[in-house]
Length: 425
Ligand code: LLP
Image 1 (cartoon, rainbow, N blue to C red):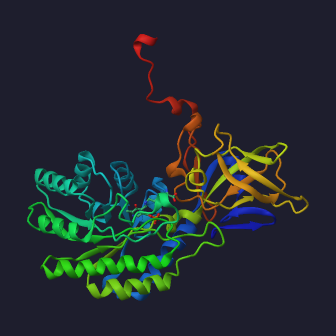
Image 2 (image 1 turned 90 degrees about the vertical axis):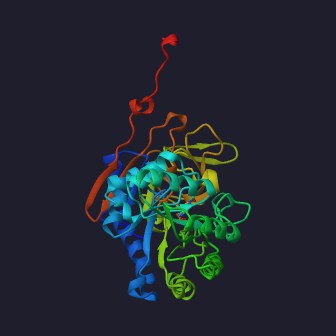
Image 3 (image 1 turned 90 degrees about the horizontal axis):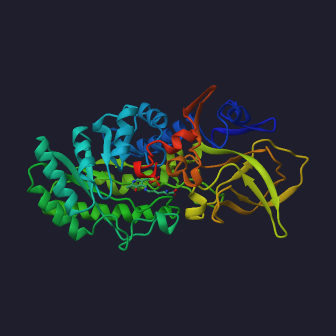
């Protein structure tokens, strides 16, 4: 994880020791490294720019479902990123963070009327369409607003991708995208509508796509479809080649060779003479974040030792939901302590509230701080208040700068908006 290093036995994020952050913001809290996000963004951008001519430099649209804190969005906006959104809420965040509509694309599944209207109002760059009714509604609301909206159609290439069945999206049995035949039909229909302009197609086969070679056939499927559309004189000027780029959670995870990837884009997409867009989420922020947590105590049973943290599955649900293996490391190294095997758990009343099973680490004691690694993507953004646990704080570090970018929720926050009806008072 770039941005994190041990100095004199203490884990630091950039120039700041993590114990100082725990003191300042309390635990559990999410901590993000700004320079790590910058370096991921520029690595992806540079690899693509090296393989592609200047006039085809792709638009990277950060998939903000990965981490939608407005400070993170602002950071990416200052780097020249565009934004991929899937809801009215994400649109709101993006605009608050300073993104302009022309750099925002909507890829939501099940677009609702209010969201479509808000996107039209913001004059976003495009709608990626999932279904007939979405197309009809965008056309209808655009007509009411006196506008014309650019639309792309999402292809389902029937290619498997994604690090877990719950985050694979590219097979026929998944709800996402449409077949070639259906897209051709929708494209023809759209070409005859007055308030939408069909401009291209998109593909996204899944997230944490560790079988990186799957990107290639997915892009080839796009290229094939472009040829078919063009043979009918249907114009294709833009391709959105999705996200899904993997990061390392465990050492054995296959990583994306950026140059090889950029070369696929140059070989398959560039000859089509289109504008190119990508939607990376996890790749930009995943390894930039940790969940900083404190050891409540160690509980020993006949069978095992449970390392009980003050963070739980409501703060970071990935291990419980996807059997994800996040690195777990002590913040302070104690070379003198023996190694132990722990089941690392949170305080929630479910056996599924487990971060790791039989994980070997140095002996931990009450009060010891722990970093759960690679938690910058789909960490806070998937957090809940389950067990009436307030949302943790979020902290951004940039060199020597430290800022709380989201306050820890208070107990009052937990019941905000709730009322006891009159007849029960
Ligand atoms: N584009 C579309 C249309 C998507 O649905 C997604 C993610 C992305 C881009 C960004 O994918 P990324 O580059 O981050 O892999 N909660 C899961 C991941 C769900 C991803 C949903 N869609 C997890 O924690 O692994």
